[in-house]
Image 1 (tube, rainbow, N blue to C red):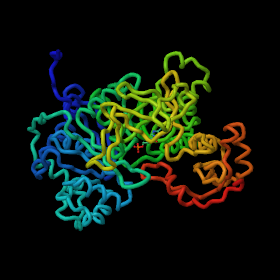
Image 2: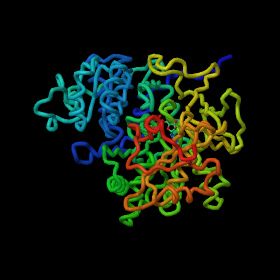
Image 3: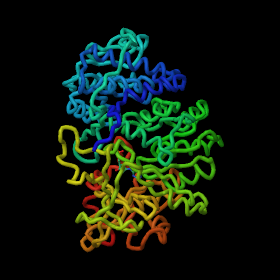
Length: 543
Ligand code: AMP
């Protein structure tokens, strides 16, 4: 027997419509590319999103068409998120930090019909335009005053003029909640990027999850500085979840340096923010240099890569801001786990509490999670055994766009995250490595991430990276690559001495190489595949 509840579709347009009715005056504050800070609110953004939807229809965009954005976090990008998906098209957020050839590949693969872009990216788009075969409409996200006198981009349109030409008289269409809403390509450390195609249903369910008290506890009392880019996994879902609960949004544009982040936190009395460790490192350095504080901030969400223990400790103990360590993937919309402590843990001594907070957190309701060995056998949740991390749930991908990469889930819907992790009895998950980065030494696994974390604990180490090097006896052994802090003279012996006692004896790197820089992906992750290639013939001293 089926229940008798209404089968109303979950649609992205409803999120913004709700905010416009119940939180009309809540602000959306943006640092614009053009210069000034722009202030708007949910009511106005909703009206403009409707104009954007109508403008798209006027350009001939229909349901299912891909419409690309190449833009920073700002109000125009925000209203496009809703205008594009709301009218049934697919909002394809393109990461401008990718190599131009990758952007061209992605836009062609997605068959984008239109491209909306910020002024910053005009030179890039001018260069790329001849290669983007499917794009029919090129829209510069600015007003007439900032339009270039001339451009090689064909029929360049002005965003504000497109909106001005439309009225706000528009009713969001209703359609199947499983309709594709947005598209984001993973930056992948190997091979071509692959498209993750989100749906209205998955996005709305994910937004509920983001707001939950034990997830990110987003609410109408929050003023959220969205540091994580809207071109990377939907800004971790914050730009969908904020209108659901009426949170104020502060969109920083390209200004992510320490002084700018601090200034925005102060000016907008931000209560929370979310981003990758690199940004927080810059903020913490700025706070140390200036003695300034961030007293309005109650919580920082840190993810994308592991939050260093010292960062968690400093935010909490020195600045009184709670750190929610979070883990997820583009393929997961992206939220998988968040590090909200269980009640008793708040009373634990600081170092014991940090042991837990250093882990990536507990599964959010809706995400099933398990670890398995190479044969697919489930491993114990004892906080020690580590295995491949598998997930499934309603906001997790079932396959890449256009079937790229073949089948990615098994018969029971389990998706292999490519991460290696432990799960403890309280449900806290800890990433120990990417499965392709884990070092297999004598049949046992060594976590390259644990070694890196230990190495960066040394005051003279700016960045560290560990890769496996072929070894005649052990199959693979760890090599530690280190960037020293400027003006320091750390050497091999000093580094190894420091690691003694901090990592298992058989995990000790066989060698240490000091380098000036390390390669990163467009989303800031270490490009270990490239380093493995570079050091393929490296001779370890003990080999
Ligand atoms: P992306 O899809 O680009 O967001 O990358 C997802 C990958 O980033 C995950 O599979 C992890 O390897 C890594 N990642 C994300 N969050 C964390 C975290 N908190 N700690 C360690 N690795 C993380």
